Length: 168
Image (cartoon, rainbow, N blue to C red; front, side, top):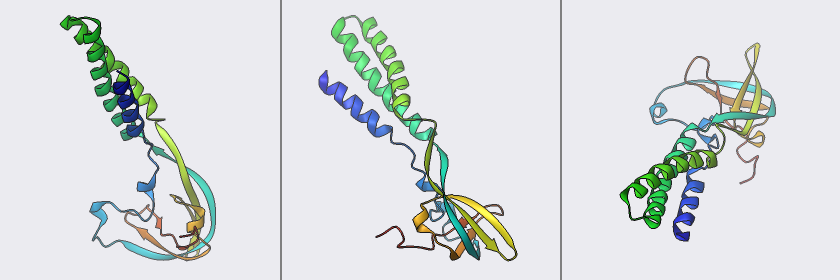
């Protein structure tokens, strides 16, 4: 029984890893964006300020709930079988364990949104000044020229222009 509880807790902790937002970085591309021509501009970064970006944690919470429900159902069935030899006790334990495990799994998987490190980049393109919030660290950017990729009209992906600013 102790081993089952330890396995349950370990699985829920692993399933509950929060979304760290790294998929939203400007230097991360989906498979559909690979080998595609995208508009590029050279922009002049004027300032870089820290920001916090709220990223959804939906899939991690869903996975945590599913793992919790499965492990809870297994634990409930084991408890039901140890309490009584009746199949009704096993079924009741499985249902109750699955429900409680699902709730616990979602709860251990964190909030619906996580705050991750980001940057506010103020930049100039021609005579206009813009601001773009992105996932990343302030040390990855500096004032000066940078490459901006625009896969869509309103999307700005300013590439880090200080590659060793955060250390190696």
